[in-house]
Image (tube, rainbow, N blue to C red; front, side, top):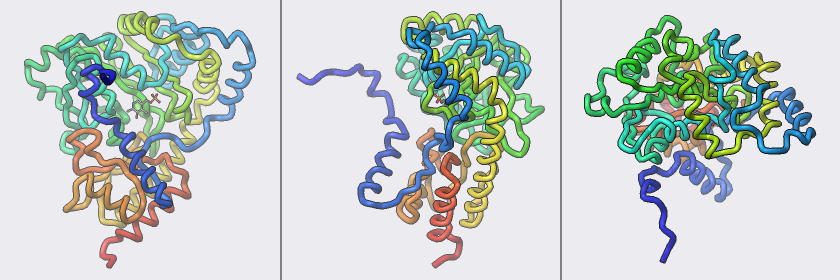
Length: 394
Ligand SMILES: *Cc1c(COP(=O)(O)O)cnc(C)c1O
């Protein structure tokens, strides 16, 4: 007899980056220098002040015990104050802010809080894989709305069949968007339409705000919660991972609607035992004393974006230049699909990119290039691609 696992696990696709990592490992085992532009994980260090704050906090024995699920005042206040200063969004730190152990944890677990078996969770295709796996592991049903250049990367909320819509309880959105780099521009009515849609259909909006602090050419992303009425229908999942180079620290927050935050808190008291107090202190330092750090990072990503765009043009592609996120989303050349172009870059240049199709079927025909690679390696990757693929080269 072999140990049995739950049937719901069989509904999951292998996690995208597990496959990519295997491809890279195979090449490296063969002694080949592979450059990965596949994964979005900032290559630069966490701000010194944050590291110092952790060091000081970890030396205090009172940080060593179980934290409270509710989060320390210092962190909840820092999040509320950041949201006010940056987005003009007023949050009550006692009822509208809940620390989560990274946005991914928050996105996964909020499915358990909001969905019953048979309910529908709306997400986008392409999209972050957890918008699909979260509902599936709750025995709910993901329903994905295509986001493509044709609809300006905004889902058509009017296209949802009535029988799906009547079961929909949750809508995941994400701007600046992974993987497409799409943003909500000033004056765009999309978020207002989403609030109206959510009210009309009794749907909770979960806006995944992992990239608001990475913006280019002066662009600064809004919070969904700044939209009139948004606080009545939704929450935002904020994360320090990308903008403060803190992916390994596992710090984020679920902020917004009081009822959702309260239900999530109730749930979490049964699932985890909160965030290490020393990490909470360090995260508060990031949000309070390092507010300009994301702007410095944005300047670096912006330069890298320009390099990548220039290279893609040199090999005959016509990518859009993103205004936010850490990704370039590019259409593959004529005669290729996502997988064949990814394979070509790996074979000819030993460079890894993410096939767009791995983010959903509407991502077919695209690849995602991550900007989270040190400048010299990025340049090297670009040179290799240009050399092996320059238009008109023999
Ligand atoms: C990186 C990312 C997250 C969350 O990252 P955490 O490290 O778990 O906070 C959430 N959503 C998207 C779209 C991301 O790219």
